[in-house]
Length: 142
Image (cartoon, one colour):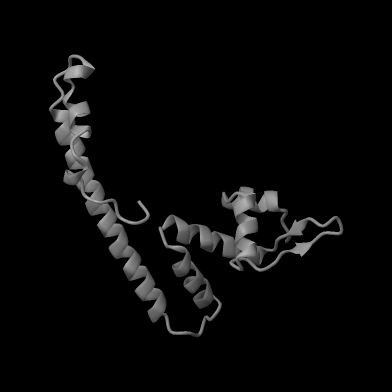
């Protein structure tokens, strides 16, 4: 079956501009062209784009996705590299969860000091204006 870029976009939830970018970067193989010059995508494109989107949703960085795509094209290869990439991503997610839990606790603490009244007396506004030295640095990609 063949799909226009719009159909592929609707089926996968990936914007046409992103699909074209994936194609230009080699993540998707070049699409066939209709007589009118429009891209025509196959079921293989649909499967690969679904793979890419799922990897993105799981938070994999571009280099990891490239590696996973290479591995997906080698079904007889050892899956050790895929396991290492997935394990590293689990650690990254755990670190983000820890950071978010810390942020949540801090925000709950700040909100708990709100006594109502005017903004001029608002402890939330005061706390947000405290020196940046107290803040922990944002991790890369946050």
